[in-house]
Amino acid sequence: MFLRQPIQGIDYLPAKLCQGKVWFVYFYVKSPVTGKLQRRRIKVNRYRTKKENLALARAIMGEINNRLALGWNPLIESVAPRAGVPLFTALEEYLKVKGKEMRPNSMRSYRSFIGVLREWLGEHGFSALSPANLVTKDVAVAFMNDMDDREDVSVITYNNYVRFFSGLFGWMVKKGYIAGNPFDGIDKKHKKGVNKKRRLLKPAELATLVAFLQEKNPEYLAICLFCYCCFMRPKEIALLRCEDIDLNGQAVRVSGEIAKNGKDSVRTIPDTMMPFMLALDLSNPDLYLFGSHRLEKYRFTPGTKPTIGQRIADYWRFFVRPGCGFGDDLQFYSLKDTGITNMLGDGVPISFVQQQADHSSVAMTAIYVGKSPAANAELKGVDILRMKKLQ
Image 1: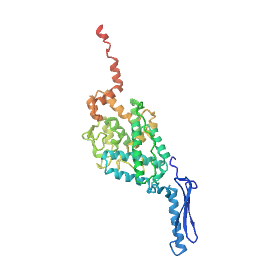
Image 2: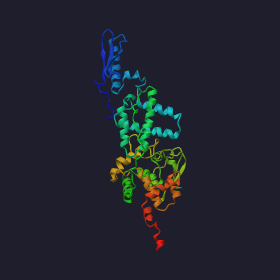
Image 3: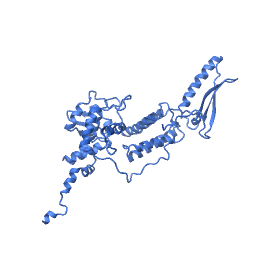
Image 4: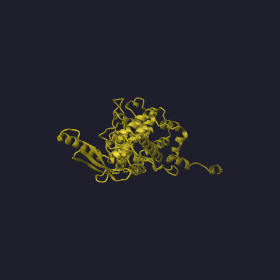
């Protein structure tokens, strides 16, 4: 566990009752200034009878000890007056404030970043009641190290995480939730010299993928096909609603509200993809096509809340790759690279491929021409030295 829970005897001593002329409950917590345990006390003899005072004292001790075990420290509150507020409550307050200032597209990114952090914290011992001050420098470094290890997190995404969380926890300092910003001093990465390490899928690997997911997770297969055939990004796929799928017209509507470039677009569903689309449950047009289900993390059936792009990448990493025997160089985005390359190799006009990929220019789509083995074969026959004309 990266999140070190408070240790009794080191970070605090539990509450006890002192019965004298004046009754009081006392406990010890570590001073954020000296690092030594410091006593705090609360008077409790407010009733006439001993029985009533004893009941009150026990209730106070129980509450204090529960809060101490979760990381509460009243000495920190003198520096950060809202330090006792649970972190998840503070995060919701941040989203509420920013929701009044930011565009919907930006807010989706904010929610996505915070969703990744909340999920990571839950996996490393953080509860819904844990206070914000438990996110220390060590925790921030551990979180960013884990993000760095994830192959689906590019240098750009990593730097976006650093930028976002530095701003978020800076806001929490200003609002009195924490005493210092745990993300201060975490540097961004240099983009120069960093190459993508993913490759295209071979035909046999593509067939293996389809067969594996048809048996194990048909809904996730549909997610893969939206990326491979319609060239959609994970975040766009995650935010699709059932009403966005037009089976009669063989089209997917991608609204500007969920698109990366903020523009509406329509993607064509190829004939070979249609059988997999017909198997999807589109009965409720208002539901998200791939929902988030609290008790089943990797169930991608329709729901009132959308799944997150990170969960799509995680399923590929933890289930698809080992299940299909793929190496680290085959990533979820390999589907999009492979789909565009294969479509160009099959002779589809580059302008049509550009429209399907929602590229801003033909030049961007043309990058994929160089990846096609068919293009290389054509280049072999070019009489670049004009030798045939000399004969």
